[in-house]
Amino acid sequence: MYRERYEFWLNNDFFDDSTKLELKNIEMDESEIQDRFYKELDFGTAGLRGKIGAGTNRMNKYIVARATQGLAELICSKGKEAMDRGVAIAYDCRHFSDEFAETAALVLNANGIKAYLFDELKPTPELSYAVRKLNTISGIVVTASHNPQEYNGYKVYWEEGSQILPDVANEITENILNINDFSKIPKISKNEALDKKLLVMIGKEVEDEYIQKTKELALRDKEIDKSIKIVYTPLNGTGNKPVRRILKERGFENVYVVKEQELPDPDFTTVGYPNPEDVKAFKLAEKFGKEIDADLLIATDPDCDRLAVEVKVDGGYKALNGNQTGALLVNYLLEAHTEHKTLPKNPAVVKSIVTGDLSTAICEKYNVKMFEALTGFKNIFAYANIWDKTKEYSFVFGYEESIGFCAGDLVRDKDAVNSAMFLAEAAAYYRTKGKTLLDVLNELYIEHGYYRENLVSLVLEGIEGQERIGRMMENYRKDFPTEFENIKVNRYIDFRTSEDVDCINNSKKETSIPKTNAVKYYLEDGSWYAVRPSGTEPKIKIYMYSKSNDLTKSEEKLKLIEKIVMEKLYSIK
Image (tube, rainbow, N blue to C red; front, top):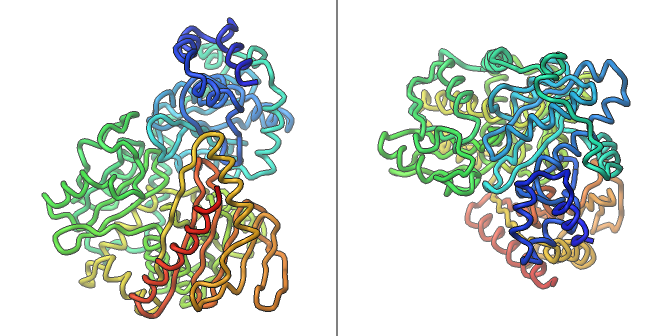
């Protein structure tokens, strides 16, 4: 089948000469042909993400056009009002991002749907804001987030400003699967679309309002030390202008950018893998930070929805992981809101099912309700979208351990512009108390217990890798460790079946969290771990958490959990 698809793309006049040349150049590489054509690039609830190139299992303008046609058919089915409301479209710094964004806009236009296209690259959270500001029916952002430079992607948002949930994704997928002939996708030229006012370019007005309204979320201003020295790196992505702008307009005057990583670079030449969760991404920031004696290092990923931070300590810098940063932000926000008596009615925080529990203990202290959601901010903000209607709770903060955070519900996605502002504000406030963020984190551990965590990602690429990941999940469900030395597993949740199992009393109940391919195992001492395949990358992920009132014991316990779990998984071939 893959050979037939390859020959069709190679010999069909519909595909352009550059596509055919690229395919001609791999005609002797059977494994490469197979990888490019053995399947269609999946359109999941996260949209599309894959390596750039010619083929059905690659990101290219044809695959983008087909996905957009699937979205267009869904919008058209909802009537003229939805078509007139239109779709907001943003894109990042990656190879072909601007071309893919324009392709999407023109496919929508050819279907009679209005498209609002940003006139330059923008961060993902600004797209979420634009959907809400412009009252569009949908949104698209062309990005592969923090993936390596050979990747690109395509994420779809719905009218609330958050990424689509499975019900919408399934309808789009069904439409996509019915499109067998790329040449039947409607076309329109850019000039014609502009003349008909179907294509509208978004200028600076949306960002101006987004920045202003984000600034209005600030909790402390005059009582903080804005002389704090910050090194910021956008890792050659979209964060350069908005992050620096919001910090400047908040009055932080000592913000220095890593020059080598200031401007957009689709090859990410200075960093390779532009993921701020990886401390190697901070190499240049650390060097610069030491030169100017910076207090804080901040990095955002290429589409500026994720953020990581390092804090000055003992002549160097200490990286905080997503759990630690999230807990610090929860603590800062709830502390400030409580002090100023600005906590909304029925305040709530939402975290993912694989995020640590230190923030839960902090929420209990401030009498704030903690909710859990599946991974992904589309699930985290699903709560806010529901509460908009029911008024049952007020969304204060959402986060996940993979360095995604957002304070408030101005946008409905993780937001590194928002997070950078609040981290700078928190660090500047604690500085007036003679403390760093690390000092505050240690105080939280003393108060609530020592939480330790580790994430192991097994990368298993290609067809064989995907099959092995499937076997790992199936076999582990049937035969998992029930004891870690003297600590027993007393409960587990299989999110695929929605079963919440009490291992001690041998009883079951149903969990309210939507189904997904993941299992979470709880130990009787408060430690836990979870196993799930990645939804966007060829990985199986193992999230491990330990808890103890003693730091050394917590660290030892974490190593024990990792040893036993990984030995079991590695044994599954």
